[in-house]
Amino acid sequence: MSYTQRFSEWFNPLVDENADSIAIGTHDSAYVSLQNYHRAVLLLNVGDMGQGATLDVQIRQASTSTGTGVKTIADKAGTATKAITQLTQAGGDGNQFLCIELQTEELDVENNFEHVGVRAVVAGAAVEYAWTLFAFEPRYAPVGTTNYDEVID
Image 1 (tube, one colour):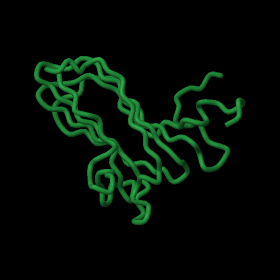
Image 2 (spheres, rainbow, N blue to C red):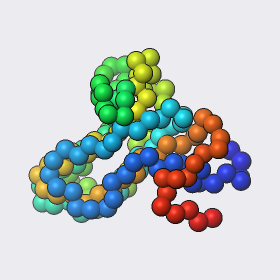
Image 3 (spheres, one colour):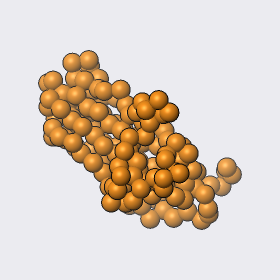
Image 4 (cartoon, one colour):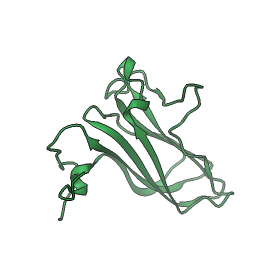
């Protein structure tokens, strides 16, 4: 990586959830392609958790942008590998900053799984959180910065 490379060119925000109080339920993002990148990272910022709240978040894979064949990203033993440890209000887990890293070779590329999305499951009570899924380490240059609202350098 050269020192002339900008963060905004190296880290491309693909999909996000703006900071808000998120109600009980299952919340799925759109599925986005990692075809032009080597890696992805999900940055999750959790705020206050309502009384009795729990939060589970994971990156999942699909073979198309419509979520065809969506499945968990798992190791060879079948254990989900791209998921946070469940956060609980009772455990004092609010106000945390978490990160899930993904290398594209961890996807089921043999079966054409090159799209990823985020699933958040809120139970018990609402949870305040925001997240952004970034693709990085682009396979080809130049890399666009159109997914940012504004870039200042």
